[in-house]
Structure formats: structure tokens, C-alpha cells
Length: 277
Image (cartoon, rainbow, N blue to C red; front, side, top):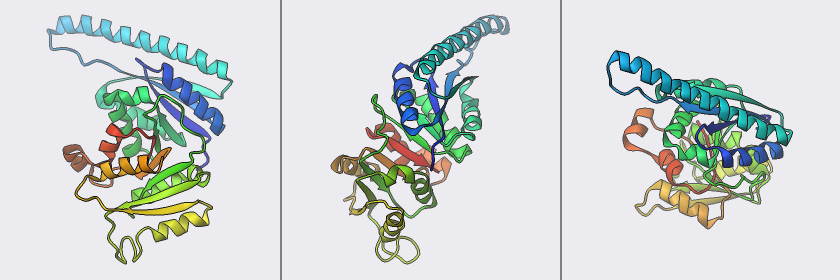
């Protein structure tokens, strides 16, 4: 994937650190930055119609005014960097935020979510639901305040032979090619001709090697532990600068009810996550 446009999502309430890492990332990639400043309007409290129409509208206008001012301040900072960029303001409600974000995601090669935006759980949820479920664009979530390495030295590629994992692999190839080592990681793999092959991980390793990627295949036993725990620990063990994985390869309603590897990784990972669906 050749990154020419990066959509960077910013929380209107906290973005001072995210903008620094976003600028550095876009400079390194030589990418245009589409800065998306998002404000999710508050839900009106239960009240009489007269009180609601006055108090809620006044509060809404204050939120809109703040969004305008924050976007203006962010624009000034990016202007000083000399980057090619545009700034988009989104004032929305929680129920509609995923649709608004998805519409903008259609015109980017990558969506970058910094630590401050990811720390807003409601905003992160809307980004994931919008971008991953309603657009073809992959997401790079950076839980750290420091910038993402332009050429990660070590990457953990979570592999389960799913369509989602294959798509994430292809879309992250530009990152993988520059690595000292890509750890294709399988948890409790089952050798079968219709899924992982007789030697689990060998086929994807061969595919990546033909693209000039330096690959190691790591087959891990869970020992009864959760898959996300295994992946997080292995990322530490191999000093991974990034984890690449397919997202939500089970029905959406199942993920919402019972959680899942993707949701747990988003919540607890300390390593940047490249997600694709």
C-alpha cells in the first residue's frame, strides 16, 4: 500500500499530542494529511420542550463554536509544518458519528488514530464501527504518545488464514518490507489441507518472502489463555514495533455481546495496531 493520503482523526477535547505524531508520520510517508476534528454533541437531558429548546440549543452552539476554534488552532499548527493538508470539522451525535467518519474514510489510504483520540472510548468505538465496517480503509491505532516508526524493525503479524488476516497482510506490505523481522504468529494452529495447510504458516511465509519480507513463523500454544493475551505477550517477547491483524472476523453482533480478540487488543495493547477488515 502506497500511502498518499492519511486521514488523522482528532478528538476536539484533546489533540495536542496526537497532532505532533500525525505530522511526523505524514512527513515521513510523504502523505497528504486530512485532519478530521470530531465533536460528538451531547444528548439533550429530559426536560420540558420549552426548556429543552433553549438550553440544549445554547449548549449545542457552544460546542459548535468550540469545534470551529479548535480546528482553527490545529490548522495553524499544521500550516507551520509545510505539509500538504486539509482540515475537516465534524459535529455529530454518537448515533451518527460512524457514518460521518466512514464517508471521509473512503478517500484515504490509511486512517491514523493517536493515543488521545483512542483514549476517548466513545470516539474510538465510532471510528472502528465506521471505518472498519463501512469503508475498505485500514486503521493504524497508536496507543503511545510518541510517533510511530516509519520503518518498524519488528512486526507481529497475527495469522489465522482468514480473509481479514490476508487483507491486513496485503495492505500492510509497505511496512512489512522494511522490517528486520516479521513474526507470522499462529495460536493453537490446526494443520489441515482446507485451512492452515499441512504446515501452518508456511504458505503465507512463502508469499511474503517473494515480496522481499524477512519472515519467521511462530506457532504458539495458548495453554488455556486467551488469544489476545498470547499476542500481547509475544509482541513484547519479539520487541514488536507494530501488530498487524485482521479485525472482527466473527459476526458483528457476536463481537459486541462477547467481546473478542480485536476489542481486547484495542483496549489493552501498548503496541501500535494495524487493523483491516
